Length: 286
Image (cartoon, rainbow, N blue to C red; front, side, top):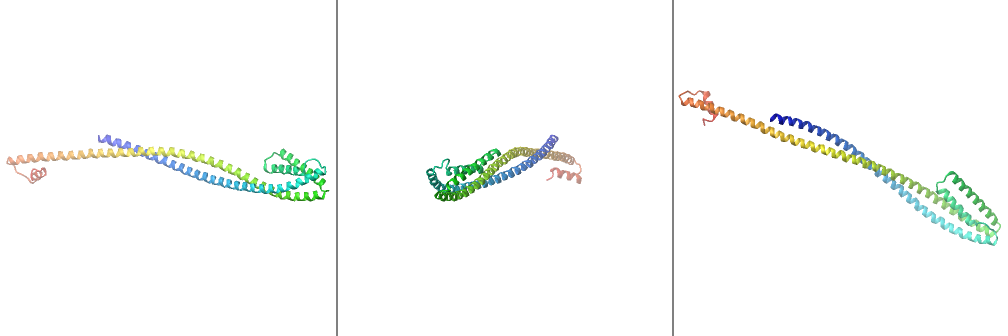
């Protein structure tokens, strides 16, 4: 029985050591994955903060676009009033064709398209040619009207106002371009944040898997250690029982020897010092 318990204890010790080693390996891997996950989470947060900064810049530039659009439109409204007067004079002077106001409006529209939209080379060339033709037509109309002093003065005023509007329009276009650039950067950065977040989620899933496996190995290790302690208790009980049995057998032998010595003494035999000590050890002598 004692041998069987010791053999079982040896097997359990080996198994427990294996559980312990495996648990430590899994915990180490889980720690590595946790560190990777935390780093990815930090990167995700940094990217989101960066994207939010681009969003803030985009919104600020869009506000500037709105601001300068109002200024441009206010100035254009003043110019349109002058062009309306010019059109009246043109009608009285029998000058046909599109008005300078309409020509100027179309030029502005085409220039805005050129500055704000992504065009193919052929499309942009076509647009530039059209703008050039309209500018020539505008100049021709202007030459036709400059012979009239009133028209000449109105044209000068209109041109000055148009120049002011052009400045606002240019500034507006610059802010619009910056807003678009920041918008594109924001979208790109948010996409990158989503990609890194997905990597973080994958690392977390792996971490949970390894952590759960490590916990299972730890439970097996603890169970093994408990079983070993239980076996140790059984072994101690058996060993204690063996010692007590031997002591009881020795006491029985001592009593039998003492009884023989005592019987011999009662029969007239002599007691030696050794006999007396044996009697005392047996408990027959109090």
